[in-house]
Image (cartoon, rainbow, N blue to C red; front, side, top):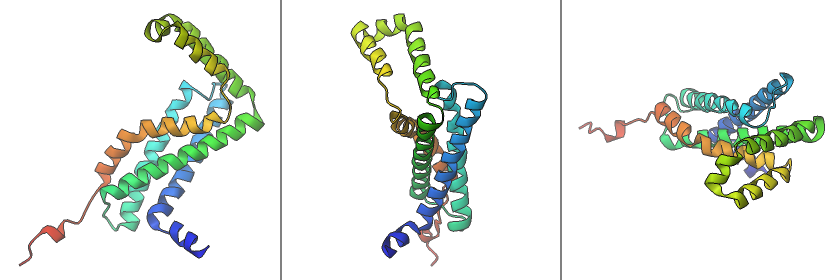
Length: 186
């Protein structure tokens, strides 16, 4: 048990997990804000929560560089921080949203599915032209059979794909290494 606690007591992991937890809670609060404004909180409206991920990834890199790295941050450390914060935030938010649509208000999920089907029917001509009638029917029926538990992995997979470029850019911006070892002091 002590070895597990020591493993998670590393500053790189600890800072990343704490910022990831904060990210997940803030994303869920954004979800609740949309819900209380009577906006369907799943789907296209929810995509704006990715800004929370970007801000907290940058904040975690800044914090780690300033307080743990004493002004230095390697690229690999920044990349690790970015991906852990993003993944942890998406997992926490996914689970909180899942619990909300399962226990607090299941109508959110059914409204989301209905909105997705309506959007698909509105763009049916274009979709059929691009993917074919059989594939459209399969996709349309797949929306109707979607389970609430898919919200969790959907959140993680979308955020992972969306975060690749921002994490790389943030890592490059905050990276600062000590190049003194390369200078000949003789």
